Image (cartoon, rainbow, N blue to C red):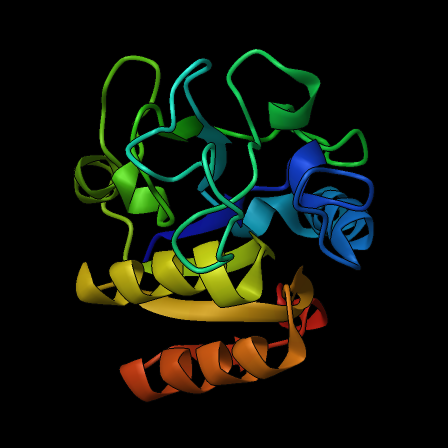
Length: 196
């Protein structure tokens, strides 16, 4: 039994004051750091994803450049590679991160499984190579990238636990729908104090 932690998109543009800031985002960043400080030994591997979008194009229609964003498939410009908005939030300690995953890069991407390391390695391949069978998931936003990453991890055959005090969603209704969908697919929910 090898357990990994997925930290999903705890970036400046997804926290308060960012281009797509989520209420509670900074608290999630600090909470994840506290979890790693107290229970980092619970995880053999730590994966941290970031949106890492191209500058100067619409990233496969992901950025709304010629019309207002619909906040479903098109979004304001966010997390452009090399900008402050794409950096991890300052309250997130990344010393324990084993694999930094970049997703987007010219196309829409929500799940951590759609990203790669700088060397081009996929998350699925890394999980298989390192014998990971269980994943805890934290990060932003519950109703988008956490949801997509959770569903893909389950599809990959992982036992998935979402730490519900270390996620934050865009909107209450879509967050509740996402949690219900994740539970139906087989995810379990726990508070971070259950980590040992």
